[in-house]
Image (cartoon, rainbow, N blue to C red):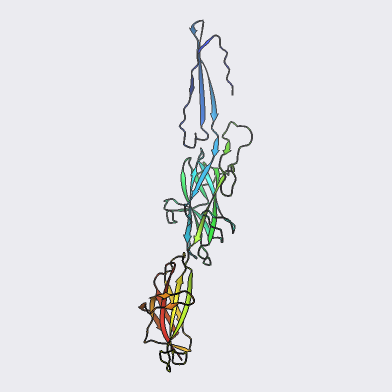
Length: 356
């Protein structure tokens, strides 16, 4: 808008005054009216005249922008685990209070995940929570959401994508997910506003929309969205079970070159090995049901948490370990519990039986 004045003499002083409006880090609030007042003082033949003034008003438009970050490391999860979390932080860098619609997509198998792995499976039972207490876990203080409501400029919110890991997955496999936030109009608490689109054409007198977001993982720049990847990595034991048998004696040869004839004593050693780089195996329970052709030797006992040398399938079991385990005569089953088994280690269960 142009303001014109007709002056009757030489202008001697032209002070300008601008109305000051506090600005946020993201810029002056959308919808703010910037008023610019101008006053012209002048004289005619040395005589001061009545000052002339004019006013101009500009409405600040809505600059739509947001950023998101994700966790610095993958989420390590056991097969079959539930409510596993990838965490994100969203900041409204717009100059207006906005809602943000939220959605999660699975990455395609073979795609590169956020932390360098290759997507190999999809998670299940996916949901999104607002992490109200910012502790990074889903608990009673958090809210199940499909959008963020009334997020003021320069405000940050923590978001949790929650998934279950299928029991069939193996150690080291990766599942990538993509969280997308899309800007929507604010102003109505408790209801998601309309998705914001860029105002076409020339500047209007009202509040126009200017989409200023950068490109995310799967979306383009200036589309009112931002997408970012997160991932889960399966952390599981990789167990190898080897059963070694050693002839101890027979009724003819005793312990000198014994043979597997009726009445011979066999020592069985069950070796449980956990591969290097795997997760620690816990709550290990060994169960070995004996066939009718052999009988458990109760006089020798059962030894657990022993050691073995060599490698599968040719382990040599050492005569160590602690007495433990049990035998169920009704089911002819030998059982034994082992201590937690870290990656790259072995443990054994030993017992003896007689050939019928």
